[in-house]
Length: 153
Image (cartoon, rainbow, N blue to C red; front, side):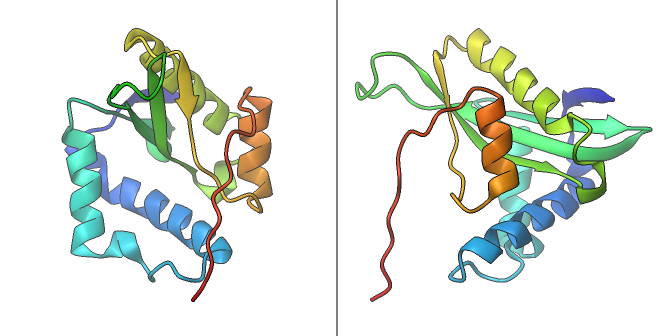
């Protein structure tokens, strides 16, 4: 497996992974639109994040096939936190390549990048019922941090 920075040419493979991630999240939130990453806005968001110099966007490839990605960025230190925080935005691994430590390797690479950017913490949001994701994060040393509540009106 090779982990490297994403390139614009990787976008079609990344969209497949992003759609898979979106479909997983839709299970936990019925208010999410269908196929966000199939829209022009979703496409442009991914492309912008790949090109951004403020963030990092990595892909994992196996036998020259992109099987996972992760992206994130340092949060702007606006005086809220004492130490710098890195936000892990998205993490996705193709279903059939899960349980091969690809997610673990991608988190490890993000951690290195966050340290280089002088961040003391990594923050990620996850749906509490997304047991595979939550289990991975806890295995990697993430702790329960905050809970968001939402009420339909």
